[in-house]
Image (cartoon, rainbow, N blue to C red):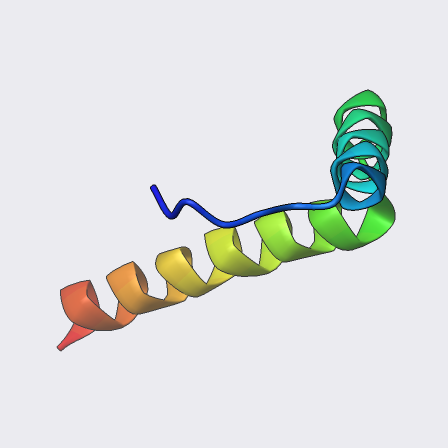
Length: 50
């Protein structure tokens, strides 16, 4: 790990962002998961077809 000085303010905002992201499952995150699953299915389907 890098030994870099980090301001306390940056640590607090990063922790708040992490806590906020843990609590909710946002629409963009769901869309991202669905698109990845769809892409994997499409690749598998094309690989089986040809």
